[in-house]
Image 1 (tube, rainbow, N blue to C red):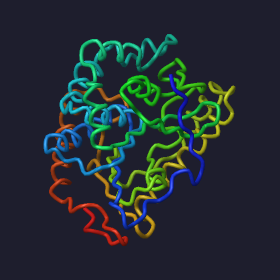
Image 2: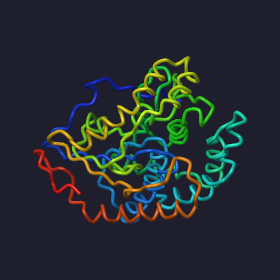
Image 3: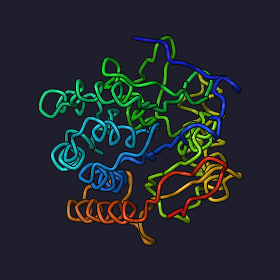
Image 4: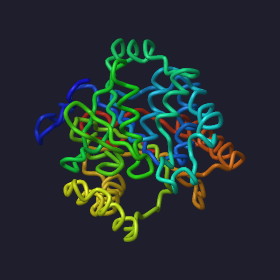
Length: 314
């Protein structure tokens, strides 16, 4: 298992604006809320719409991106209905008895056995088209985000680490020499990271409506502070999570000059939650994602052109 690359400021310089503009696609996590992103990516895949150079996925968003990049357009929806709704995956009684609420071990075992990612196709696409896919996880030691460069050898494990929701999945997983959990703790919307890596045109597929504001949950913070008391920097990350999330939203709403940020968002009144198990609601959310993805493709007018001119942002 490799040690993740941990970047310091200045390690990645902005792209020269005389070069081909660098485009990024970011997919937010959110458990079952990610069914919307699955629909959007299904529309992108069916239309062979792929103008992006850099992909960054967080938690469930990373899982959906992986299937998309492997060319398996139906996989995300199939897994949601076939496995995510099964009692073996989300089980409140098991959780109350001290087990997992979301059993990632069972999920990975079953999907690898019966509906595995096409790792060869994923790897070939990344290399032949010079693409880069980063998976966000959170270091338990430092509370900082780690951006794992995915390849076919480590992809499945890295996706599991990024999806390891604290407490809801009881185990701790390793990435190289570090213990890590859900990437959404440290960087749920990595738009600033995409810009730091040279992206001048960023598309974000959200799992929350456009005007969602994250608020602190003091009860959850108290529980997390006790549960992870051996990791003080991680506890700090939990406490600043809402502020960091809202700061990322502010950044994508008011990007600096020379950066174009586009959003694909669920409609107002969105009711899908992290653990929603209503099949009819999930099917409707998936169809909504497909329609939003198709509409986005129609509005697409190319990335931000050299010189920093906005090229008709959807």
